[in-house]
Image (cartoon, rainbow, N blue to C red):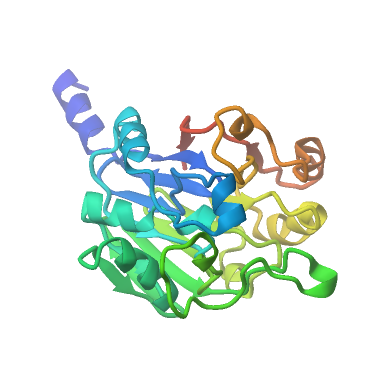
Length: 289
Ligand SMILES: [Zn+2]
């Protein structure tokens, strides 16, 4: 084979997907042509937000610095699983900074347009599908699990009726899971341990399963229901870091409810055994098919 032919074949071959975990549940997913952000959170609250319900929004200077460090110059779509502060607070800033549409429901629209009434926003409904580059993103409404299950207690549950930008205005809103199809692999992004029936159609075909691992009641149900049924190639654990307060020191902590040893042990019992990835913040995660 001539060098030239080899070279042109290499150029034609598609790039595998790549991801970066941005902290909390934030994911950057890219095929190097198209870049999606899911739950991108670059800003954390401080004590005064918790105590005095102060206005809470993107720390734009810090966010820009971080985006520069990561070399993110273009974003094509933003998706937010629900409207709690640790998932949605940077959506408005990122939408207007990158001129990239945020996709979601009424509650999220209020947050985004509170930041910038001109920020691009695409209204989504249950089972909406969006084609962005080679990515096909399907959005499904699903319930947010109760934080304290026996008493069905939700942290700031319900829709956002009026949003004035205060910390406790970031209510749950519409809650979504995402199934993302791409020629280089199927990716599921789901925060909840309660198995979502729509996922079943993808059993055995899931390459990348982004899974929140912070809820203590989830340790076993996550593995025994979701991971076992879906049999993904790899599980990427997210939402494992301390996100309640802005602090370089604290953000290196795992949440006390996360038990990585147990997670690894349970995953190893499965056949086929998925690869478990617990990413470092901002580090490149290769998602080869
Ligand atoms: Zn969260």
